Image 1 (cartoon, rainbow, N blue to C red):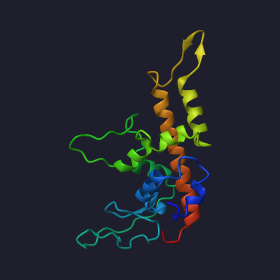
Image 2: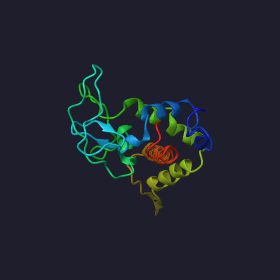
Image 3: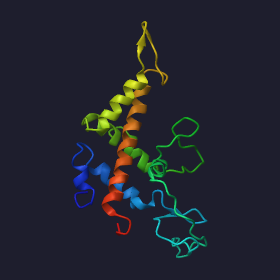
Image 4: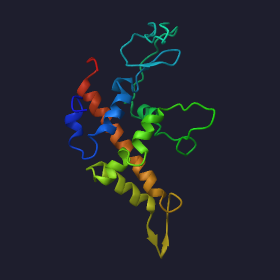
Length: 191
């Protein structure tokens, strides 16, 4: 991790410049994939191809993808990365693995972020500036206020605010990580 271009930026955040972040960066690989440019077969590449050009993806057997490149997406890529890492929402709930169904997100990425002692817990434990503030504000908002002795809990059973707030904090970190990585790397620099 100390050799990575983001290491100087990561050092300012206690608990976020360790091996878990190194594994997360390895999973993301190239920040320009988010939002990226897809081919007609669904492969996502960095947005560097002309519309209609052949897809550059090869299978393990050396076969070329028969698809053609579509127009690059114009968003920041944050939501695409959240989806890729399993931080998205399906019908108002966090996605869960189902028996016999392949997950459409990177399960190891979600584990690195949300496992016990994962990056979300590192933010809380180390009181990481900025992201711990996001956690505290979100948790306070979700726990509600007490009016006339009655608690108004907006997010359901007690304790649930903690789990939602830690996910919001880690999503803020991932969004900033992607933006900073794209800023440092630039559009044409090989990663």
